[in-house]
Length: 407
Ligand SMILES: Cc1cc2nc3c(=O)[nH]c(=O)nc-3n(C[C@H](O)[C@H](O)[C@H](O)COP(=O)(O)OP(=O)(O)OC[C@H]3O[C@@H](n4cnc5c(N)ncnc54)[C@H](O)[C@@H]3O)c2cc1C
Image (tube, rainbow, N blue to C red; front, top):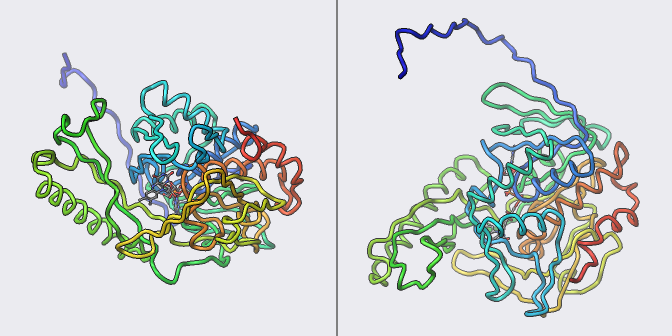
């Protein structure tokens, strides 16, 4: 029994903030900005290669949109050849599929194409465990404030956290921020769409009529049918949190009115953070275009393979879909991941350089994992040197599973 009278008070000290708090300085080989699926893939792969890695994110926990926006389904890991479909991205994707399937937290689905529905709580813990085991140093709640950039190189990046400033010095930097925030903060050119590409706020519905839905192993459903703008303006972005939730409430009301037998008692269990599709991305050495991905040409600097379709959310009401032939495969070149004004930044994920249509195809999670993997290997190979000097043959040999394997 706890007796408060018998325990001594914990001694305290009185402190005052110094007028200018010095940054804690961390030195590393590779600094990854953004701990979404792309950044986590990059950090884990770089650590596996023996590199010292810092993984930083503004959110208080890792996972990016995969977790915080309850995306719920991983697509783009397979091609679309029906019974003959094969996995086009391996590496950490293999570990993820194996471990989460064993836990019952990942369900392989063959509707339209192979995709994987995941439990976002289990995936978050998997990412955290993997990061911990890999020795990656994690910096969460860390918002990028400044980038020291000269002679085509990032020298260090500064973060503000609730507990004081932190500076990270590294040889190489991976911009996995989704919105090209590292590249932008370095003062380099970036692209923004002239018209909105809409995001969505995903949400989970529970307490509906389980028997009517006929999915005995699930007691919740994921809804992804709202459309919201995702502006880069801070106040505008905040407004969209409420707008997305309002739309979600409206969707539930609609379901209750139209399908009372199923949804009469349903309620929303959780609202994701606004899911951002395409806001700002780098100007690469080269831009991947819709024509490139329609074409099966393989660029000489291919580092990742894709099969996902064009899925551009460019009007509030509609989605522009363009499906490719079942055996269609296209490639992401390294040159669209490297800002043309920098020698030691590689972008990975939804902020690489592609036109709006091509980006809408390559930003799904399968290719994000492949790009993160490629970014890690590339920086591992170049060390202190410029990315342009990477030995492409060696890089592609290392990426064999993601470029050639067909089992
Ligand atoms: C509504 C919606 C539905 C989708 N559906 C699917 C689907 O079914 N299947 C699929 O595979 N893909 C889907 N996608 C696409 C996919 O989810 C995303 O493109 C992918 O998760 C992006 O991963 P990322 O790592 O590139 O970026 P993010 O997950 O956005 O991660 C970027 C991270 O960087 C951090 N960051 C950004 N700026 C800073 C800063 N200044 N300082 C510090 N940290 C910073 C953020 O906090 C964030 O954690 C969907 C996307 C949306 C929006």
